[in-house]
Amino acid sequence: MKIILFLVMLALGGCMTDDTQSTSAEAGSATTLASARYQVTDVDRAVRFYTERLGFALEVQAGTQLAAVSRGDLHLLLSGPGSSGARPMPDGRAQVPGGWSRVVLYVDDFAALIDRLRAAGTPFRNDIERGTSGAQIQIEDPDGNPIEIHEASEGSTSAAAGPDATTAAVRYQVTDVDRAVRFYTERLGFALDVQAGTQLAGVSRGDLHLLLSGPGSSGARPMPDGRAQVPGGWNRVVLYVDDFAALIDRLRAAGTPFRNDIERGTGGAQIQIEDPDGNPVELREAPEG
Image 1: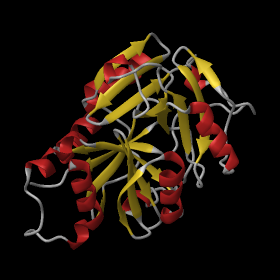
Image 2: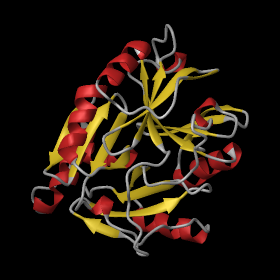
Image 3: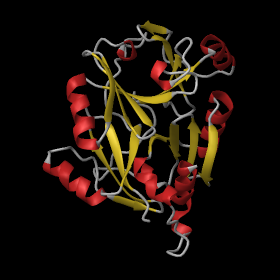
């Protein structure tokens, strides 16, 4: 419920007065929220894709600029033209769809879902990859943003037993898993959930589960046409923080790269930083109250 309330505030914030802003505990707990952002060229089309083909629920939509959809713990912002999260960088670079940073959906009907997606004409990036954690395959949404479909663990009935069919995460490519873990835990307040040597680590913050995929992991293998899965791009995680200005000062003092200056929109202020491999992280100020 708290994410729905907050996303309504995010979408409608420009129409709210001081008298209408929430002061409830639910709104105040927004500093634990996290989500992912995808750039899209047509918000309505993106909403149809995620709700009709992948089982997401539509939480809120603000016209043609922004929509928020969710599946399990994953909250995905679909950022259309004109939204503050889609503005060009100071050097003129456009925030375009695509890249390799991606959401990961665990499903219990892996083979059947692949058949349905192929029948619907959904683009596939690769063939099924198999690793120690099971099978996975990548598809693309209508704007070319990647989604990884992963088979859920057999017999899983809890988070402790492993990911089940309601679990979702975000995957980032990294060149040094230990270095990435230190960055996310020490600078951004993530917790280390699991690490498998130099190949893979899982960290979390609130509802966000982030997979750090190092060299040698099944989630980092090249595509059939030889394309490498490289860090970077514009798809990103979004962290809501209540010490926005202070955190920016600490990150600058630590030498963290910033992509842009503070952007302000109807949902508040935001800024983008990069992790040690160039993967983007968006910091947003949490709503007051």
